[in-house]
Image (cartoon, rainbow, N blue to C red; front, side, top):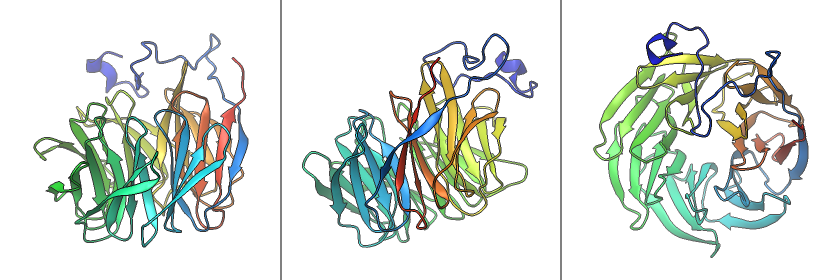
Length: 340
């Protein structure tokens, strides 16, 4: 649909990636949506408490996981082998993130700090202090010279990676900040909160450029930019994921079927070949995969023994990682075995 008519279409076509002009690629000639066949490949054991976050490295070689057991673990993405355990945080860890060249990891902890870790040297380089409550999320900018963090202290902070100093404090929300992320050129930051708002910020000035709110105003538990940064995907505690065009403040698509009423659950986009999926954890212990365009649930992955709070899509392979709460602190790696 043309931009002027997109808002009138109940299910507009959206291009979430720069790699394809035709965004109905999951649909065959009969109009049926292609369905993947993700199967469990590896079960990664090592964490002793809830695993809050898993992230494949941009280079595709590694998987990192962050846990309530105060540790971060590094895994080989191809074999599932454990490589290293990073120790230093004094309380549980809620999030972890990679630098663009897969050289560094940052982690956000209930000990009110963010730590920067050197992957090759296997050591902590910096401890970022300033938040006055739990740090819930963190993310590098594409240049990897800045980190953004969100906290239960209701602020978003921007940090200089080299010096470890806080450059800017944004009085962002009126409730805990549940997610933060830079867009793909680093000029914008998106944040969300239990206050029901998603906000877009200018990285350079710290100005709030846009506030998005749904009519029902549910607490927003997660947000991420689409791969091309033209849209944001927001999860909320009303069992819904919403795809927003943040330039005009319109909600374009809503994804449902999963359960999300209590926890902050990660969601992500999986873009492989012609496939465009939305992937999310769920409180019914499943991993849900939707076709971006049709909003259909194309697969539900089952096997976790507790709420699935973290998911990550591999940058180049048809591979998904997922993690769950304390009832099952194991990480699962799933591979799509369907053939086109």
